[in-house]
Length: 266
Image (tube, rainbow, N blue to C red; front, side, top):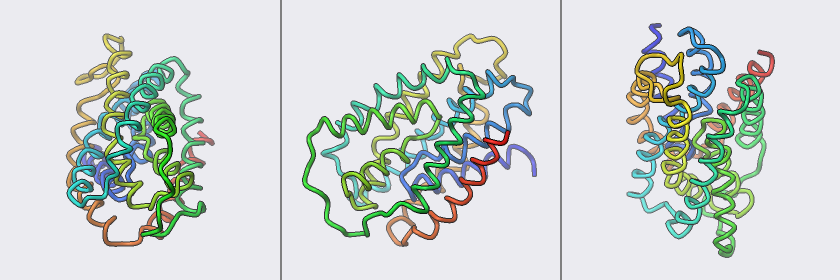
């Protein structure tokens, strides 16, 4: 299969999961880009931050598309969004800066641990059933902290951050799963966008970047990922409102476990 087609198909998978699960799709895109960029002749200290930055730039488009779909269906809790975003953009600015300072091999191993957490979250962790009542409202500062944690993880690992946001909203605050997914989709564009801008800034004029790069965001890979993912994200939104995603989450969780083991073993 030609590499551009493979990247576009991966973007389609990432987009579908973005709409279905409220994540940015980075847990699919980042391992793929970890594998592709070295094949383009990039050294690891360039390939790793470029994989993270390009993934975040793609996640902006996927989650914005998914958020529009959830908004039309009235599933987003807009009261929480400003507090989540305010913490998230600060966390994303810090995370994107930290990731460019850390050795690429360390980031890859740490990303594998994130995948192990995602495997647990998608396959083993209990979640409230659809329609279950929401807990009493929490203080805004609590949601600002959730946004901060989401932004840090999002930018440092090049993922949208939905794994953190949805997990905290569902497991800690007893949000209904669908509402958590929809609200996560609404906050991730701002968080991922801030992180992507951080990677552009820290990679600006860095020697050794491939053609069509804005700092640590490669526009060629970005176009291929987004072209495959935008329509698929709407399909994921449609599916999230019609099917029980438990079985799909478990199958995807096993895939994450496999990728995590591969990253740990090198």
